[in-house]
Amino acid sequence: MNGLCIPGVPIIGNVSSGGSGGADLSDIDATTEITDSRLLFECLSPRAYYAADGTIQFAAPNTWPLEYKDGVAIGRHEPEPMATNLKIGSRAPTATLYQLTKTSNTALSPAGIDELIEFATAYTSGTPTLFSDVTLSESGPLTVSVIGRNGTAEMTVRKEGTTDSVGFTSDFGRSVLISNYDATATRNRYSIYFPRTVGDVAYIWHIQLEAGEIATSPIITTDSAATRAAGLAFVPNPGLLATAARIYYTDGTTYDIEFNGAARGAIPQASKHWGTRYIEGVSYAKGFSR
Image 1 (tube, rainbow, N blue to C red):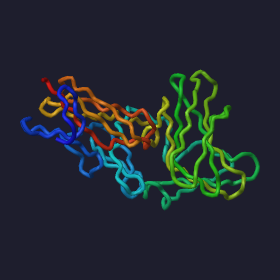
Image 2: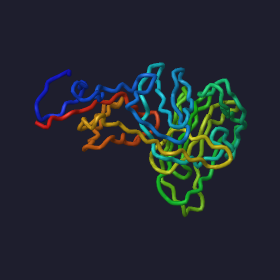
Image 3: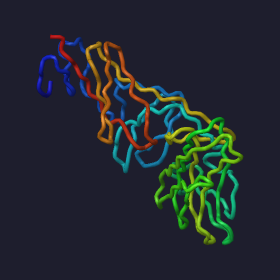
Image 4: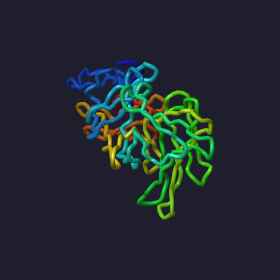
């Protein structure tokens, strides 16, 4: 055992399995390519992740892939709540175009092979815009997230009729805009604006509209809205010997699971935007009865 033992005080860290019937209470490293068998994950839908080469890929159902940033393994993404992308044709936007032309350009796609749409300003009059009306069943916050990048044009996502807006950079990334929408309004609309210089281009790979204030991982849609199943993750309590488990996140925060004699404990679902925070490890705590 590493560290100081104080009777009656739980220990966080390496706890040997000696005298525990072979139960493994050693630390769990979530940054290894092969998932530690003590990390349990369930998700009935494919789920997007950042691969080692920096591209966006999709893992098979019930697979919890290792994710990377700038080529460095950083851990497993937090399990996400169920979410629905209301945007139809998310990867090949078919919303109304004003003063824009649209062509495919797969060579620059953040997923390596999937279709990327290149938008170019066609006319100098008016404001070149890609816009879409939103149909909601109830009022509340709506998150619009767009994966794309500026080319020679600087895009801006805006909720029409407000000053709510967000821009892009010259590198592929996800811009997120959260605004309140009124389901009873005559029209709810978000727009993506472009400069007026003819021939200026910008790129969009994916658009997602989802209720709430969290931009979850990309949910691809074609001719209808699509839903991704909830992700669930658990840490088992080997031999029922641990009193708690501590989850370590890449932003320096932790979360303690109290087992209270249970065979496993749930890892909380994500409360931050996709790609913001990852799980890098887990430690067990073992208390002393006397």
